Every structure is written in structure tokens, then in C-alpha cells.
Length: 424
Image (cartoon, rainbow, N blue to C red; front, top):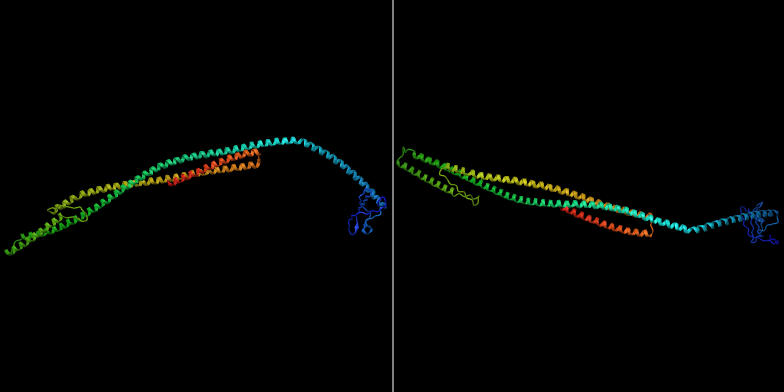
């Protein structure tokens, strides 16, 4: 209801539960027409309301309206107080902001100074770290150089020893060749002497056999002559002269035949030649009697035997000397083999040292790279520092390439030395 007395209906907001109305609020656009109903003494059903119009002339409503106006006044005062407080806060906040704006350039200067000091400290730290890394690399390089010099000296000594051993080996080979040649000559002479001894023995056996045959035949002929002499010496008792002359003629004919046979045998002995001995001839003077022939044959044999025994003794001494020389050559060969094995072991040790030194260099390079990566992650320097770091990294990469080249050269030299030792 307005002041004019006209009715006005507005939107109604209600919360319903079992068709009951808890609260009702009517609002208008004008301030005077504001009607606020916050609480009701009793519940109102929706059937009692007609288009949201309520009799506003009741005293209860006016009481509630007064109470609501008081509450609004209180709220307005509290709101004004809050606005004043907020104004004070805004003023203080604006003052702080102005102070901050005034202090900003000083803070910026301080921040710039701090950044400069930080960059200087970063540069100093990087320099120290690079110096430490360079010192480590120099130390490893110096140790590697000293080890390489030692290995080179040892390899030079090994080469000198190898040259001396090659000379010894060449001398021993020449001695072996000479001894083999002399041994072959001695073997040939021994074979020749053995053949001569065999031939002489065969000749001797044939001569003895023929002498025995001659002696047997001569003994048989002498027996027949003795029988003939006995028969001639016998008396011719009880025999006529004719019979006696006939027997004597027969005995004479037999004696002449035996004499002719003896002459033939003597001639055959004088002209005797051995077929097995080749071109050698044996001329033995046949004695008139058996006893003289035996003595002369015995007197000729011992001289030849003495010569043959002397030759055999000389050959035996030569064989013993050759055996001793061959044993000495074998011992020297075993010594050379042992020296070769020792040289191979020393070369393997040097190779192991070179491999270890190369591995140490690689480990140092890896450690250096890891340290640089950690420093870059921790520090993150400015553009100037990054440019210097790039230069240092380039120098480090160049040093690394040089070290890799040195390592490759060392590996090549060690491989060549291994091949030389294997050839040895």
C-alpha cells in the first residue's frame, strides 16, 4: 500500500514445506514503498494470500516495520563505519604504494649490484674450477708423459736386446750350419771308413780262406810226396826189375803232375783279384814254404789294424765333440726361448700400463665433463660468462682431441711393438 492508498503487488519469494509459508518479502523500486516482512508470528498457508496482497494496517506489521527500520539504521551505520575504515586502509595502502614506488629505483640499484657481485663470484668460482680441472689434467698429462718416457726407454732397451739377440741367433745359426756341414762330412768319412773296413775285412776273409785252401792242398800234396818217397825208399824185394822200373815211372809221372798243379796254384795266387773291392788289387808274394807265408801274412795285418783303430778313435773323438757342440747349441736355444718369453711378458706388462694410463685419461676427461655439466646446472651464468665458458669449452675440446690423437698414436705404437715381439 502506497501513501496514496493505492495497492501494489510485487514478486513474492517463498520457501515451501508441506504447503506452509515460512517467510515473505515484498520489495518495490521506490525507497518509501519498501516493505520488508522478515518474520511472522504464525505460519501462513498459501491459500490465505491473494496475489501477494496483505493487509498492512495491522499493528503487528507496524511493529515489525519499526524493528526492521532500526535494524536498517544500525546496518547503515555499521556499513558507514566500515566504509570509513576501508578509506583509512586505502589511504595507508596508497601511502605504502607511494613509498614502494619511491624505493623501487634504490632496490633496483641494489639488485643490480647484487647481480654483479653474483656474476663476479660465479666467474671466480668458474676460474677456480677450471684451474683445478686444468691442474688435474696437467698432472695426469705429466704422469702419462713420464710413464710414456719410461715405456719408450724400456722399449729402446728391448730393441737393443733384440738386436743383440738377433746377432747371437745369427751367429748360432751360422755355427749350427757349420757344425751340420762338418757333421755331414764326418758322417761321410765314417761311412767311407766303415765301407773300407768292410771291404778290408772281406778281403782279409777271402785271403785267409784261400790261404787255408792252399795250406790244405799243400798239406795233401806233401803227404802224397811223402808216400811216394816212402815207396821209392822201399826195397824192391820179391820184385823184378821191370816191375820196379814201371812203378818208378808211375811215381815220377805223378810227381810231375803234382808239381805242375802246384805251379798253377802259385800263379793263380800271384794273379788273384777280388771282384768286390772294385779297382783295388791284392798282390801277395807266395812263399816257397807254408811256414814263411803264414808269418808274412801275420806281419802285414797288425799295421793295417793299428791304422784303422787310430782312424776310428779320431772319428769317435770328432763325434763326441760334435755331440757336445749340439748339446751346447740346444742349451743356448732354450736360453733364447726363455729370454723371448721374458721379453714377451715385459712387453705385455708395458701394454697393460699403457692401457691403464689411457683409461685413466678417459676417466679424467669424463670427470671433467661431469664437473662442467654440474657447474653449468648450478650456476647458470650471464651472457658474458657463457661466452667465456664457450671459449674454455673450445679449448678443452681441442685439448681433448689432442689427447685422443696421442692415445691413438700410443695404441698404434704398442700394436707395432706387439707385432715386433711376436715376430721375435
